[in-house]
Image 1 (tube, each protein chain N blue to C red):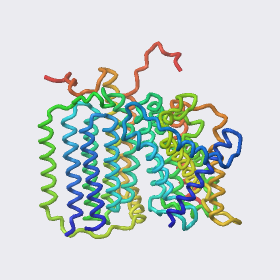
Image 2: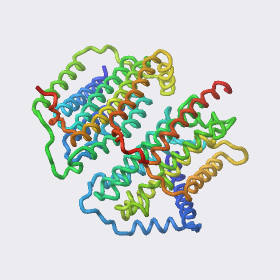
Image 3: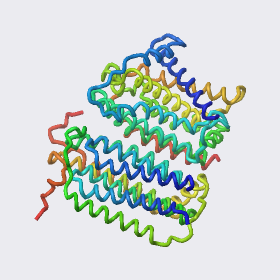
Image 4: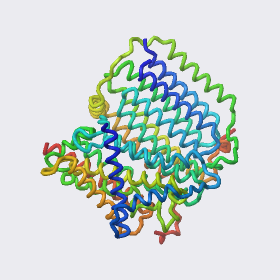
Length: 174
Length: 298
Length: 103
């Protein structure tokens, strides 16, 4: 049992456990922060799989995103503290069935397919970052330009949808 | 061994930041005042709120201290004195700093008090303003160094320090660091006159001591980050490298503490406005200019 | 054959299962989006495991993970904008009440 195997298993288990806590807890802020720590555990899992840039990026981005999700939960949900212990779910058995079916079929694919010989070493982290940068700006530049334009469009669309319509009589507001 | 040494230096540095902060705000230079204040805080009664979210209430200040210490793990004080030389050091500092936000959200939400909660959400509003202003100048710095490794970034400034090469990036990163360490004028979330102490309001006794210690370590970690990214780290002639590091870090800390003393507190709405309308175009212009400079003068 | 790939794939499958359970069983839009985040995270774990243990020299594997992270951010932004607009119009973001187009 190598160290890498132990860490991957540990962080994977932590990620899945925090993910389950997201839907089991009554407090909304705890739910959002549990999702944050689940994503952090996955970022640590990437780090233990020697994908250093991806791991650090995942940890950084998900912390900010989930904190923003936390404030949206406080804004939009009815019982952010969770002391009322409301049950806000529907079609529980159907979704539990679908979830378990998805899990079992994915595990079956993972266990029964012959993946071939596993690679034992990964490139050095500095080399990986340099390779990733060259790949981004070389072969995959079109993909990233498209992604950049998509992000810009999404930002403009999100602002346009979320902004309040300006009333006609309010020309003297600051 | 290196870890213990760096933690010791961080503790001494945090002590000096406390002395400097007392000097700047109260006008008197007392070397022993933080020690007595810490002992007094540890001895005081720990008042628990009525129905706190126990997990967040306990974890908040500890996470603040931990995230500042994690960020300090990739900062080189001399060419050999670094806890872990990660291949993505500059990005890791950012990643650790974002957990300051998570810590303050927990510390604001945990005690189940109105002022603390508003202080915590205000910190989130501020961070959305300057999050880009922290990452984009680092992109320009990494462009010059052609690497994200922190020792490599310092070595790349051997000819010309980054503060002269990219002054726009330095100003933006300095302002964003002051806001991340919630120093005045960006200290809406622990404002004494505004929110009755904000996030600090519900903490007493030992937890307040941990909170304040976390804040001091955060200030000195951010000052060291500014020094290695923009002021050339340990480079300089005359003094040995560790002395240069210490002098530069203390000067930057004094600058950070002094810079906002005479300005009124900036509301997070205004900070959002100015950072997104003025700051981000300036940061993008900085990346563009540095790109041209790097291609023209290798 | 070392089981590291299998462990990582099982973790990805478990995250996917929990995410689908959440996305289907919750009534509030924000909680549904949290389920979707978990689904995408499961996919990312699988991708990184495949990159590391089957093709570690190909940087395109990591690039695909970057694309998924980008997609997560975009979908969260647009989803929350829609949530804000709906909250302003109706006063809640419960999906049980979203029956205007039904029948």
